[in-house]
Image (tube, rainbow, N blue to C red):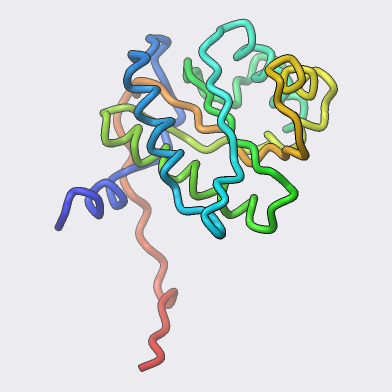
Length: 175
């Protein structure tokens, strides 16, 4: 089995991270992998916000917790120190799919670098809020952007979970 297919089969969603910040070079490689994701018509209609600032990360966590309806003290990002937020340009018909591919590439890249990752939802709802629209404005980002998801990244705290058995009857051949 080649390394890419092995990574696809071995990567797991991690829900317990150490506080230690990964090297910036690793984060940059993960982001770069996302930039090379396939996109509809090659339009590359996504952007990534790399959050390593703890104050902003905590603000995101709290917003995400409130949107998700969890009790105070719950961290939807499971302690990951890095949050990569992918947004898609709604003016492109494939923005949601393109953003999903970016997140998939980033999770595989994190795994290949010995880091854990997990996709966390509710980026869409976060970027409806004025404080997140303000962040885009402050960064000089114009357009019709919708949050697709967060890739929470960090060092794994504990063991990598075993793969769940694959469900049967999910492939049909038309030969």
